[in-house]
Length: 195
Image (cartoon, rainbow, N blue to C red; front, top):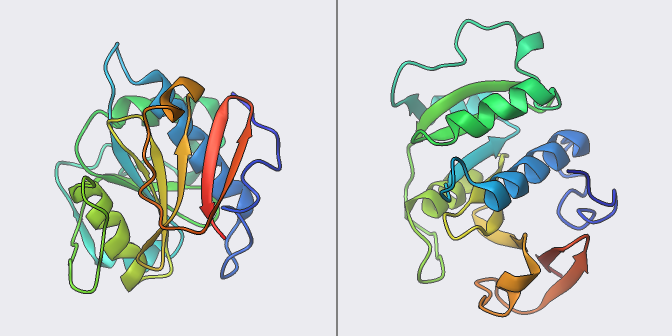
Protein backbone atom coordinates (compact mmCIF):
# COMPACT_ATOMS: atom_id res chain seq x y z
CA UNK A 1 0.00 0.00 0.00
CA UNK A 2 1.39 3.42 -0.93
CA UNK A 3 -0.04 6.75 0.11
CA UNK A 4 0.25 10.17 -1.43
CA UNK A 5 3.75 11.25 -0.32
CA UNK A 6 2.36 14.42 1.32
CA UNK A 7 -0.33 12.78 3.46
CA UNK A 8 2.04 12.38 6.42
CA UNK A 9 3.73 15.79 6.07
CA UNK A 10 2.35 17.11 9.37
CA UNK A 11 3.39 13.98 11.30
CA UNK A 12 6.70 13.28 9.55
CA UNK A 13 8.11 16.79 9.62
CA UNK A 14 11.85 16.78 10.19
CA UNK A 15 12.15 16.42 13.97
CA UNK A 16 15.43 16.46 15.83
CA UNK A 17 17.35 15.19 12.81
CA UNK A 18 15.08 12.19 12.33
CA UNK A 19 14.81 10.39 9.00
CA UNK A 20 11.42 11.15 7.45
CA UNK A 21 11.50 8.02 5.25
CA UNK A 22 11.93 5.77 8.31
CA UNK A 23 9.02 7.37 10.15
CA UNK A 24 6.85 7.30 7.03
CA UNK A 25 7.64 3.58 6.52
CA UNK A 26 6.69 2.84 10.15
CA UNK A 27 3.42 4.79 9.92
CA UNK A 28 2.52 3.13 6.63
CA UNK A 29 3.25 -0.32 8.12
CA UNK A 30 1.17 0.57 11.21
CA UNK A 31 -1.78 1.56 9.00
CA UNK A 32 -1.44 -1.72 7.08
CA UNK A 33 -1.50 -3.68 10.36
CA UNK A 34 -4.53 -1.69 11.55
CA UNK A 35 -6.39 -2.36 8.30
CA UNK A 36 -5.41 -6.00 7.77
CA UNK A 37 -5.00 -7.41 11.26
CA UNK A 38 -3.65 -10.93 11.17
CA UNK A 39 -5.47 -14.15 10.36
CA UNK A 40 -8.86 -12.48 10.57
CA UNK A 41 -8.42 -10.71 13.90
CA UNK A 42 -7.41 -7.21 14.89
CA UNK A 43 -4.06 -6.82 16.62
CA UNK A 44 -2.27 -4.02 18.40
CA UNK A 45 1.42 -3.22 18.55
CA UNK A 46 3.91 -0.46 19.33
CA UNK A 47 6.82 0.92 17.29
CA UNK A 48 9.40 3.15 18.99
CA UNK A 49 11.44 5.01 16.39
CA UNK A 50 14.69 7.01 16.80
CA UNK A 51 16.95 7.45 19.83
CA UNK A 52 17.23 3.66 19.91
CA UNK A 53 20.15 3.48 22.38
CA UNK A 54 18.18 5.39 25.02
CA UNK A 55 15.05 3.33 24.31
CA UNK A 56 16.96 0.04 24.62
CA UNK A 57 18.28 1.20 28.03
CA UNK A 58 14.69 1.79 29.18
CA UNK A 59 13.32 -1.53 27.95
CA UNK A 60 13.94 -5.27 28.16
CA UNK A 61 13.02 -8.36 26.17
CA UNK A 62 9.85 -10.21 27.17
CA UNK A 63 10.98 -13.37 25.35
CA UNK A 64 14.08 -14.33 23.39
CA UNK A 65 14.36 -11.58 20.78
CA UNK A 66 13.36 -13.07 17.40
CA UNK A 67 15.47 -10.44 15.58
CA UNK A 68 18.67 -10.93 17.61
CA UNK A 69 21.67 -12.14 15.68
CA UNK A 70 20.34 -11.26 12.23
CA UNK A 71 22.47 -8.85 10.17
CA UNK A 72 21.22 -5.27 9.91
CA UNK A 73 20.84 -5.65 6.14
CA UNK A 74 18.15 -8.27 6.78
CA UNK A 75 16.20 -6.05 9.21
CA UNK A 76 15.48 -2.94 7.11
CA UNK A 77 11.93 -1.63 7.52
CA UNK A 78 11.73 -0.82 3.80
CA UNK A 79 12.36 -4.47 2.84
CA UNK A 80 9.02 -6.14 1.89
CA UNK A 81 10.08 -9.46 3.47
CA UNK A 82 10.91 -7.72 6.76
CA UNK A 83 7.55 -5.93 6.70
CA UNK A 84 5.75 -9.28 6.48
CA UNK A 85 7.91 -10.67 9.30
CA UNK A 86 7.03 -7.63 11.44
CA UNK A 87 3.33 -8.21 10.76
CA UNK A 88 3.71 -11.77 12.05
CA UNK A 89 5.74 -10.72 15.09
CA UNK A 90 3.20 -7.97 15.89
CA UNK A 91 0.93 -10.71 17.20
CA UNK A 92 3.36 -11.18 20.10
CA UNK A 93 3.45 -8.87 23.11
CA UNK A 94 5.95 -6.06 23.25
CA UNK A 95 7.32 -3.18 21.23
CA UNK A 96 9.54 -2.93 18.17
CA UNK A 97 12.60 -0.67 18.47
CA UNK A 98 13.59 0.96 15.17
CA UNK A 99 16.75 2.96 14.51
CA UNK A 100 16.90 6.30 12.72
CA UNK A 101 18.25 4.51 9.64
CA UNK A 102 15.28 2.13 9.48
CA UNK A 103 16.79 -1.00 11.06
CA UNK A 104 14.38 -2.94 13.28
CA UNK A 105 16.80 -3.49 16.15
CA UNK A 106 14.62 -5.50 18.51
CA UNK A 107 11.14 -6.98 18.90
CA UNK A 108 9.00 -8.10 21.84
CA UNK A 109 10.38 -5.37 24.15
CA UNK A 110 8.80 -4.35 27.43
CA UNK A 111 9.01 -0.56 27.79
CA UNK A 112 9.70 0.59 31.36
CA UNK A 113 6.91 3.15 31.50
CA UNK A 114 6.27 5.71 34.17
CA UNK A 115 2.88 7.39 34.34
CA UNK A 116 4.30 10.36 36.25
CA UNK A 117 3.49 13.58 34.44
CA UNK A 118 1.58 11.75 31.67
CA UNK A 119 -2.03 12.62 30.96
CA UNK A 120 -3.86 10.36 28.53
CA UNK A 121 -7.48 10.50 27.44
CA UNK A 122 -9.72 7.87 29.02
CA UNK A 123 -9.91 4.66 27.06
CA UNK A 124 -6.26 4.49 26.05
CA UNK A 125 -4.41 1.59 27.64
CA UNK A 126 -0.96 0.40 28.63
CA UNK A 127 0.46 0.41 25.10
CA UNK A 128 -0.43 4.09 24.83
CA UNK A 129 1.01 4.81 28.29
CA UNK A 130 4.27 3.12 27.28
CA UNK A 131 4.35 5.22 24.08
CA UNK A 132 3.74 8.47 25.94
CA UNK A 133 6.26 7.61 28.64
CA UNK A 134 9.14 6.57 26.38
CA UNK A 135 8.70 9.65 24.17
CA UNK A 136 8.72 11.88 27.24
CA UNK A 137 11.95 10.33 28.55
CA UNK A 138 13.81 10.10 25.20
CA UNK A 139 13.96 11.76 21.80
CA UNK A 140 11.98 8.86 20.28
CA UNK A 141 8.65 8.98 18.50
CA UNK A 142 6.17 6.16 19.15
CA UNK A 143 3.53 4.77 16.80
CA UNK A 144 0.78 2.69 18.41
CA UNK A 145 -1.56 0.37 16.53
CA UNK A 146 -4.63 0.01 18.69
CA UNK A 147 -6.76 -3.12 18.58
CA UNK A 148 -9.59 -0.75 17.63
CA UNK A 149 -7.71 -0.25 14.30
CA UNK A 150 -6.64 3.33 15.01
CA UNK A 151 -3.00 4.38 14.73
CA UNK A 152 -1.76 6.99 17.21
CA UNK A 153 1.53 8.89 17.17
CA UNK A 154 3.21 10.15 20.35
CA UNK A 155 6.00 12.70 20.63
CA UNK A 156 7.46 14.33 23.77
CA UNK A 157 5.00 12.48 25.99
CA UNK A 158 1.88 13.65 24.17
CA UNK A 159 -0.55 12.32 21.62
CA UNK A 160 0.17 14.31 18.44
CA UNK A 161 -1.78 12.46 15.76
CA UNK A 162 -4.53 9.90 15.23
CA UNK A 163 -4.89 8.03 11.95
CA UNK A 164 -8.20 6.41 11.11
CA UNK A 165 -7.41 3.96 8.31
CA UNK A 166 -10.98 3.26 7.22
CA UNK A 167 -13.46 5.97 6.30
CA UNK A 168 -16.39 3.93 7.63
CA UNK A 169 -14.76 4.06 11.09
CA UNK A 170 -14.75 7.87 11.09
CA UNK A 171 -18.48 8.06 11.86
CA UNK A 172 -18.01 5.88 14.98
CA UNK A 173 -14.83 7.61 16.16
CA UNK A 174 -14.48 10.30 18.82
CA UNK A 175 -11.05 11.89 18.73
CA UNK A 176 -8.80 11.61 21.78
CA UNK A 177 -6.67 14.42 20.38
CA UNK A 178 -7.27 17.76 22.10
CA UNK A 179 -8.44 20.72 20.02
CA UNK A 180 -7.23 22.45 17.93
CA UNK A 181 -6.32 19.83 15.34
CA UNK A 182 -6.17 19.61 11.58
CA UNK A 183 -8.21 16.91 9.79
CA UNK A 184 -7.00 15.61 6.45
CA UNK A 185 -8.57 12.79 4.39
CA UNK A 186 -6.89 11.27 1.38
CA UNK A 187 -6.53 7.78 -0.07
CA UNK A 188 -9.23 6.43 2.28
CA UNK A 189 -7.22 7.45 5.34
CA UNK A 190 -8.12 10.25 7.74
CA UNK A 191 -5.37 11.90 9.78
CA UNK A 192 -5.96 14.20 12.73
CA UNK A 193 -2.84 16.15 13.76
CA UNK A 194 -2.11 18.78 16.37
CA UNK A 195 -1.89 22.23 14.83
